[in-house]
Length: 263
Image (cartoon, rainbow, N blue to C red):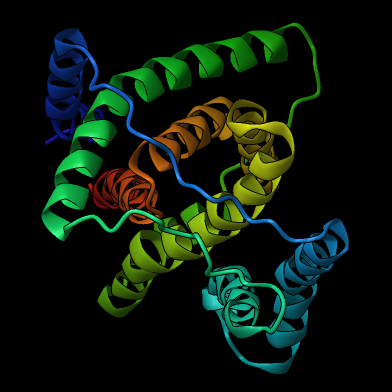
């Protein structure tokens, strides 16, 4: 099978199902998560500063101390996860309070997450194509844009070891979605929601999500993904559906990278 046909074989069925679900219409919005994260601004900025420091500084320190090599892309998520674990139990932060006010059965979480993800697929596909064409047009006009693949993608393309692929799969579909959703939706979105409302907090969180990934080629799709995750969090009142959708999104991208890279 030609490598050019593989993305169509993987994405094609998702697009058809997604367009079908979009044509059927949307479910009525349900009450969002309440309460928000009512902590003082000083405590929030201390929390955010600690997480940001863990995200930037700890990976550099650990990479210098340990012979990790190509596994270094795990370090930001692990560092941020450690910081969130401390915040979970830290007196006065109450990070876990109100995180998932609605207790949803796992069957409902999986069904709603899969439906939302399939509806999102055509939107992300069209956004990715349009954004890519726009960036290519700007490059032809002489704008000095740097369009490079992420370190994670480059590592997957260079290393075909089964153990490495399994570790990368776990990191992309479990570790990264859990840590990022706790940080962005569970932390930033909930705090801003108590100050400026759900809509503005969702846009602000989505912008931060897309910018912190530092990938210009994927900026618009990541922005739309984050906006959808924030909307799902508000609708479902639980942090689990955004985590599942995020994991499905990463799983789809990993399947494309691995299958195209090995063909």
